Length: 392
Image (cartoon, rainbow, N blue to C red; front, side, top):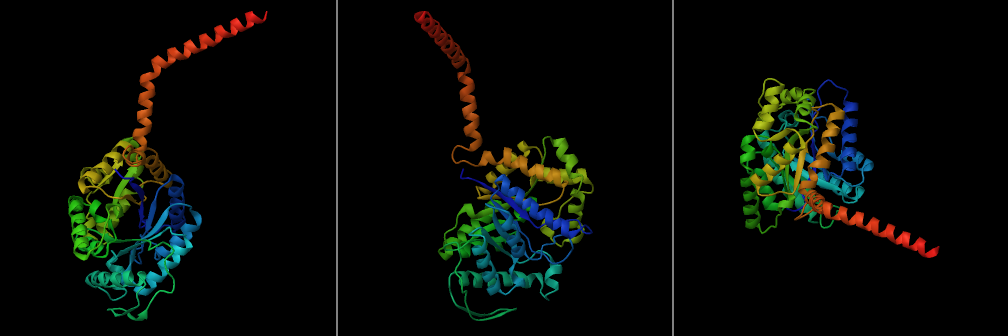
């Protein structure tokens, strides 16, 4: 397989009532940690209500994170573009593209919290209709066009960008998909990437994976666009420890708070998570096939399951959460980097296969080589004795 990229989709999810300043610092520290571990991408969410997903501007967060990291690419996951003037969305992303020297990505979506859009007098239908309109404007601006357009929320008159992107021809752009074909249709129409969020967070979404990419390809062909599975990113759930028992114990820390948020606060029916207690919640994640709470073997099996179900994709993004305490959470990311990523990277022969094959080859030759080593020592010893005898 092609090199599978790994990263995080960081909403983030912090329990309401905690110190938000410290929570945001943990988010920045996590991105730094992932950068050191060799993760490829971090996508940062935008939310304005409900007190749990507390980053209001992914662009500001990305600017701070970019100064603390060296390699990881940073994306808006997602910019709720219906809330913004599309001209300013494009302008801010071009600025970030220059500030990060090409490490920025734009993720677009309608916004998932109805309590966000309500404050702007918009309905969920409005935000979805505006997503298509505003995305089209953003793509035209980034191509260098001058745009005059009247939308439901904004008026643009001869609008154009005064900077070109640092990345040529443009930085990565992706549109979010949950369960409906709306996101895949827009991805294919514009020839951009797809962020499958709900597609891996519910059984129905999991079953729809292959169909989603079929929609992308069908729309791309219709509009004369080129799309690649490398630009398809799946968002999934994991917490990994050295043993399954340890992983189960770890998530007792915060998994119930996370579940209750989706069960009682976030009006996000595609995330209709089930479970009345921690055990049922763990079972729901593992048995519905939407995630892995367990060992590195469980994690590898889940990534392979998603690969087989989808037909192949470009990046595995793990949803950021605080099911476990900060130490156990960081350890989970380390185990995935050390023991999962090598099995999906390296090309036709993965990094894991290469080293395991070398180990197997050397092990198979050990007996013969050990005998040869002993013979070599004996030969050199005999030569030395003869050399000494010749000098006396």
